[in-house]
Amino acid sequence: MSDVDVIVLDATSGGEMLHECLRSIIGAREIIVFDNGSSTPIRIEGVRVIRSDQNIGFAAGVNEAYRHTTAPYVALVNNDVVLDRDWIGVTTKALDADPKLAAVQTIIRRDVRTIDGAGIDVSDGTIRQIGYGLPIGSALPQAWGVSATAALYRRAALGERVFDPRFFAYYEDVELCARLHDAGWRTAVLPVDKATHRGSASVSILGKRSKRLRTRNRYFVARLHHGVGRTSALLMEDLKLLLRGKSSVRGMIEGLCSRL
Image (cartoon, rainbow, N blue to C red; front, side):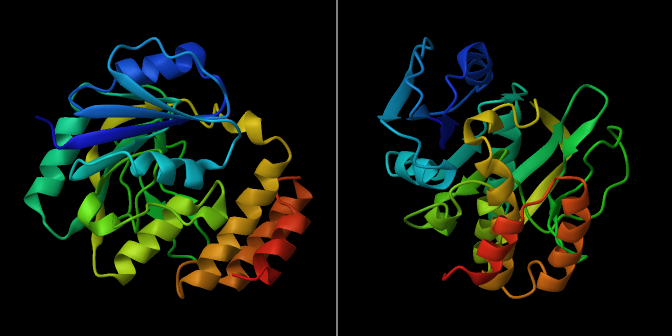
């Protein structure tokens, strides 16, 4: 029996996109879809569906699904991701080999030629995906953390919950990596590309909240975990992004001033 349970969140009636994702998951003990207020009809045999009447957020939705898992390893896979057939085998082998490794991902493709993400970098005081838009095979820096776009986690490291529900959506995986590192665990990005991400195809459900949450939650991470994002660097980045309409003043205020 596989040591892996897989969680896929769906809030957008994912249709064929979701079903292609589910069909690509090979070798799991159980696949759980958390239907986050979408009432998506699931037509894949053997998939367990847990439904919420309303969208409770990515973080809380994953936490609810996680309570229904029991395997020693738990994978999180976005509904707009397609895994290679050996993704579970490759990532499981990495956790099996290193008992101090809490989470692992592979390089994720945007298309057959281009990288979507190769882990998280916080070295310059901001928080960003490594490798986005670069050609497959490019030299990449060592990642600080892993992205929950498609990642495998060790249950013993996670404890009783996966994400901090205050984040709702965006950067909750960064906060999790910081929490794991603080507890003495490691994370790693394997130097192989084994998944394809369609690029936030499910973001439309959040509408105008998306920009505010993306802005706000970076400051939440920096305030909760010293050294993971610097407020000064984030502010400088957001001022530049505001000129292009890609940041939120309200998100900046909430991120800096909200009570945590």
